[in-house]
Length: 378
Image (cartoon, rainbow, N blue to C red; front, side, top):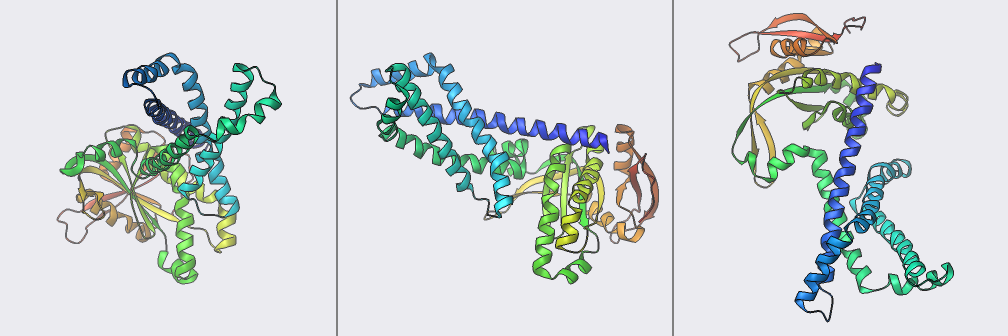
C-alpha cells in the first residue's frame, strides 16, 4: 500500500516536528525564566540594578542565548524521541523519566564545557590547554548548581507534559486544563472498536502471563498508526482498544479505515517476532460508527474523560458481529455514507440487517475494503 506508506511517513515527520517545536518553546521559556530569576537573585545588587540587568540580558542577548538554548532543546528532543527509546529496546531496560533527565544533564554539562572553553579562549585569549585548566572554576559554582536543579525539575515536568500529550493529545489536554469537560459537552465523533480475534483461545494457549506480554506487544504497534491518521485512543479494555476521530473533519473517515490497514501492516512487519515468541500472529477485527456523544470528566480519585451515547454501544455490538459474518471491518450505514462521500479508495458492501437485543430498530451493517483488494471473506 504505497499511498498509505506515504501518508504514514508524512504524518510521522509532522509529529516529530511538532514535538521539536514544543521542545524548543518549552526549554526557551523555562531556561530564559531561570536565567532572569538567577540574575535577579545576584548578590550585592540593588533591586533597580537587578531588574535593569535582567531586562538587558533578555533584550540585548536574546539571539545568542536563544541559539544556545535551542541547541540544548534540539538535543533533548533527539534524545527523548530517537536515542533513549532505542537504548530501552536494545538494553531491555525500563523507560524511566529520570533516565531522560539524567541524559539532559549530561548534555547540559557538555554544552557548559564547550561554552567555558569558548569563554576563556575568546574573552581572555587563553590557549586551549589553559582554557581547559580553568574549566573547574567555570563549572563548579553556584550558578551551574542552580541550573542543574532547574534542569532536573524542568526535565521532569517536560516528561510529564510529554506523557500527557501522548495520552490525550494537544487539543483535549488544553480543554481538560481549562475545565472544558467539567460540564458534559456534545461532540461529533467517529469510534472504532478494535478487538483481538479468538482472544479466549489465544489466552488459553499462552497462559495469563505470556498472554499479557502478547497483548502489550500488539498494542505497541498502535501508536504510529494513530499518528498517521490523527486518531486518539479513548481506552484500552483487555484485548480491545477504542479509538476516536473528529467526525467534523472529512479526512477522518478515510483516516479511520486507513488506521486499520496501517495497524495490520505494522503487525505484519513483526510477524517473525510474533511467530518466534508466541507461535502465532495476532489478528484483529474492527467496527466503526459515527454520531454525537456526550463527553465529560468523571470520577474524583482517578478522573478521566469519558464518552456516553448510543454510538459507542452500537459500535461495540457490531464488532462482535465480525466473527459471526467472518469479516474484518464492519461499519454502520451512517459511517458508510460519509466514507463514500469523502473517499474513493474504499468500497462498501451490504452485509445484513441486524436486530440487537434491547434496541427497537434494526441496524444495517456493511463491510469496508480497499477497491484494489481481491477481497475474500476470512
